[in-house]
Image 1 (spheres, protein in one colour):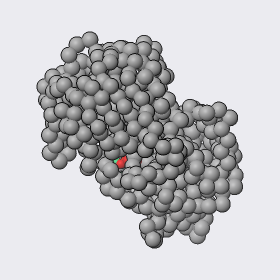
Image 2 (tube, rainbow, N blue to C red):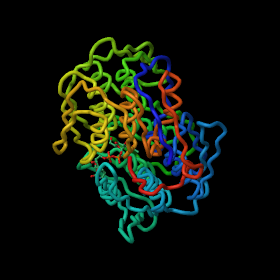
Image 3 (cartoon, rainbow, N blue to C red):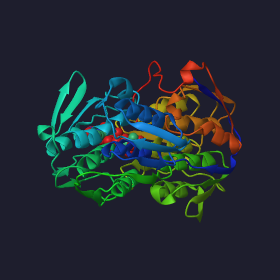
Image 4 (spheres, protein in one colour):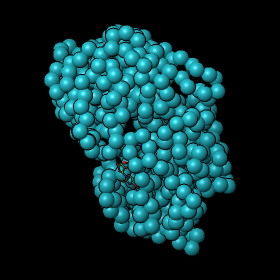
Length: 440
Ligand code: UD1
């Protein structure tokens, strides 16, 4: 398994470019299953989850051409298999996103039920209840979800009230409803920018989706969907992570190819803490840290509030801020795995249920660490950048799932970070590693 070696203490300076959003690319790739015609996606990030999703589509029978590294031309004209197997779902939960499109276009789908993961129990019950509301028959058998449209035909539009805001749940059901007979209304839908991006792609394919980006989405079913070209939005979490990297190292970074509007709550919080964030143009931020950081509390919540996917990175930053910050995690029940690793570097953090209190500033010292999930890994990298001495982070396959070449991007702006390759086979895509947790 690959590791990162980081020697901390260097202020980052220079320019970094943000990649496409993994969490938008994954549902958009699944959406290609809704059409017999080609869907071309640009600006896909070059990360492991995208390779996994591509493999899943190909296993189902789709053809995926890559004329350029970040462009996929997906043709799902011939689908032979209607199943996302356990081996894939356990390594990437987002593979459940094929359920809605397969069920809607072909009237049947089988997806292994994802189990719990590093950050919580993560059920998909809300997806399944919603499919039932659209007329599907849903059975659980041998650890799999088996769903069928009524009489093997089409789903039927309906009114769905999500009990809890769910991002992939909203995406899955929104995709399913595009080919259902009649109108579907989703209430308490997720409002994340990735939902809006997916809706835009679906509408380009000929769907009729209105209200994406609000908590009420209306979808008028159509007979079939066609071809489309779409460019994936910039990754707002990668953007936030680089803002945190500039801030924690007291550096000065220009972050380009991003969409600041998608992370307004994050930018607002960082500014309260004392980070200077200037919008040079609509897709470029300049981040510097002219003064001492001041601890501020934060609560994670669904968009447009502060995202849970930035909580771990914010915790790393708070170890360097003056005072005490209380971080409340309301989205996932067990998402403080990084705290104990940060404590090993000297951070003063106490956990009480869904609350973590961080008292700073604390000089961190390098240590051997283990990454537990995607965003936790990012927080450990941030801590390593500011720690005295050498930090070795093990299991960086987690970070490879969602950050494109993070070590190269950081090195380009002055960080002392390198990848230690343990073995060639361990770093190949698709090889599930022992103890590899299915997650985000
Ligand atoms: C997505 C993101 C992930 C992010 C999360 C919350 C992708 C691929 N992943 O994950 O990066 O951290 O949103 O912003 O886009 N829940 C249920 N039943 C369900 C579905 C969800 O109880 O059927 C619960 C979950 O356990 C969790 C909460 O709802 O506590 C939110 O989960 P959800 O928004 O569904 O997260 P994901 O879509 O899996």
